[in-house]
Image (cartoon, rainbow, N blue to C red; front, side, top):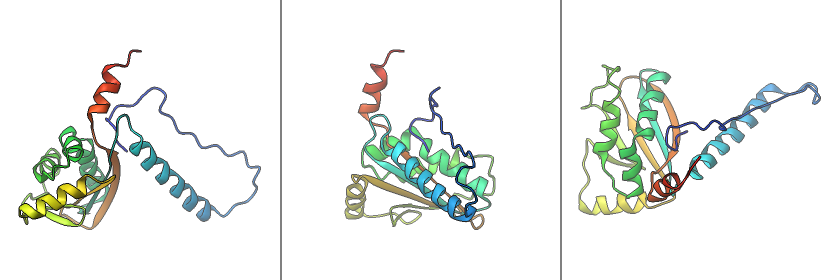
Length: 177
């Protein structure tokens, strides 16, 4: 989860169990815990300082989960991607830049990568002017999905974050410790 990639000294999550519930179905507990944590993750990102848009980044067809997660985090953490989402600018070049920053993965061939905003492919297939207008309208919504297929394997990862807004700058410029 990414708001601005910084961690406050008070950013903490704790789960405690004292055994008072007795024996429980661990699979049911894990499923319920996952659902609660996913909801909290999205809520924290949606409620980030000055945030207006929840960004979901799905990276699939990766070599392994580590590659998928690293690339997804590079995308969701990019200030250029965050500001493009805030500006409703379907600039696939900013997403490609974030993928390219993951230079440790020499098996990623930029010519085989597929980038989508929502379900609309924007790279390598480019959209026309009316398609760009539709994408811009999509990006004005409360939730934006960026989907990147790497063509290096079958693993996937999804991460969440938020846009970077004028409100974020105002909140943090005016905050004194």
